[in-house]
Length: 301
Image (cartoon, rainbow, N blue to C red; front, side):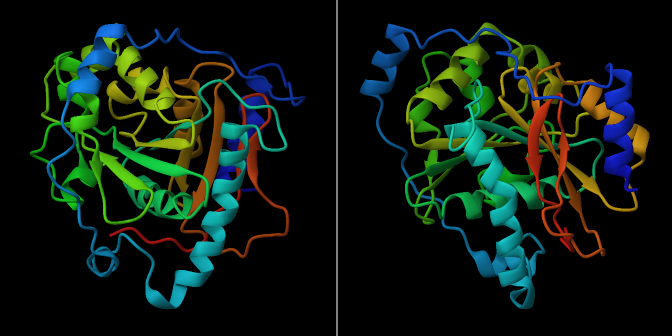
């Protein structure tokens, strides 16, 4: 039995053994976007440049699968994204509150969550009727911003700090159709307090409601490493926790899930497993909801 299966079994027992239908809490209150904020957005100019994404360079850096594994990994990401999209949009299942807001996290560093965020974003943008906004929510170690070369550009923390800064001016288009990017922004010693503020609730509400066809994918800091990820998780509908095969301690997975609110939709993805997946086999904590196929042989640089 894998670390994920053991973690799910023990967590179910600790929470009363409920393995029935998933329940989804509404989570923290998210205020509507104010009329003043709408005026600021309407008057703001568009971003001044487009991010050029060199996928060959990303592949050489180990952030995309090598060419000989590209087709296999593409199929696995299709399996991972489908239940997330279904829960976000209510396709075949009841939609969940803020289901279009998806956070990719891990218990500890080195699990492959940034690799997962990037590749999941690239897979999701292939959907014909959806767009994807990738957000660098790891405001302590903004690795995606660094990978894209925009670590010095204004971003999420700047918009939260300054209500007069229009959100649309810091959401950067990319040359990948259907994919845009919001950098982490200028670092702040009080980042946790900023992310826990009412202003963040307004910003997140705007990200999730401006475009009904948009999925917002957050690359988050590890759940057991920083408090910033906890503040952000309160406002997100779905959480994907990346677990590295044969490395992540079972207790770390349990502790990471325990940091999340009851009723949160949580998916667990096994990373770098050498075991062949079984048909119809996926990891899901029923009481919390969610679900994802296991990811095999992924490598992070």
